[in-house]
Length: 144
Image (cartoon, rainbow, N blue to C red; front, side, top):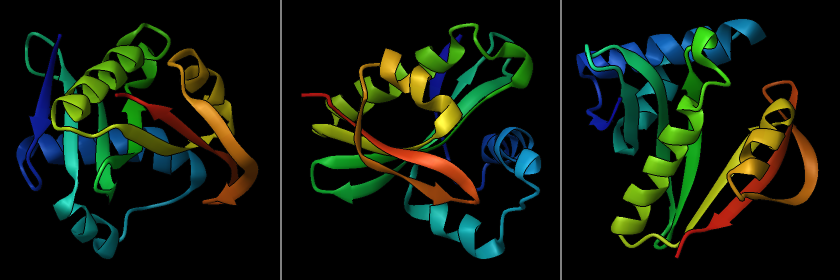
């Protein structure tokens, strides 16, 4: 398995959008808007790829501040969830962020994903909130 950057509007980005749509959007009856996708041009996108080049998992980082990134849109192929691929892609993304001088990662975790992030040593911050019509938690991790 390989962890690689994904260029905005590349074929790999299109594969990431398809994966994110299947895993994160369709279950909530949501679709990406053109504006949402255009806003991702300034983000950092990554994927976990199989040896034969298939996208298995993806995530994005949005710049939050000089030293902090917001992890977004973490998705793993449904059939491969709970296989360690999510842990792999998050750890590799953290390593990339640390290598670029970032010291903190924040995220909005769906309530069902909080246990996963707790295992990756993220901590909850503040109260639960509703985003895209479901319960989320603010989470963070210092990576310095």
